Length: 107
Image 1 (cartoon, one colour):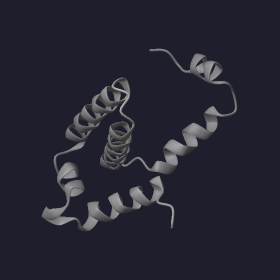
Image 2: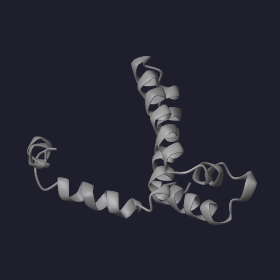
Image 3: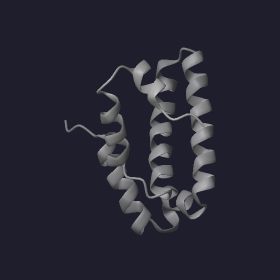
Image 4: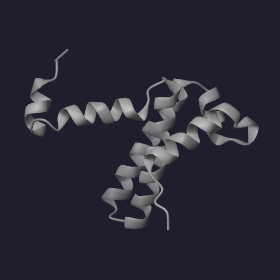
């Protein structure tokens, strides 16, 4: 069995963004703009939290999949590549999480 990755999902989102047409949920989300995509991500985040609190493993897995999908769509809507996020994560691995968090600029 081949292993489906987040990169595979990002590539599918890219393809559907280009040729999805009216039958594509991805294309419909993108057509509504980044603000709508952000709202959908927020809704999925809340649903993921609820599934975790309820301790429902299958529901948590399903909601997590929705959350990752909507995050990638939001990134696409703002022209942010998955590789950009991976690079940011890679930088953070050079120090402990507490050190990294403390080093961030404060507003």
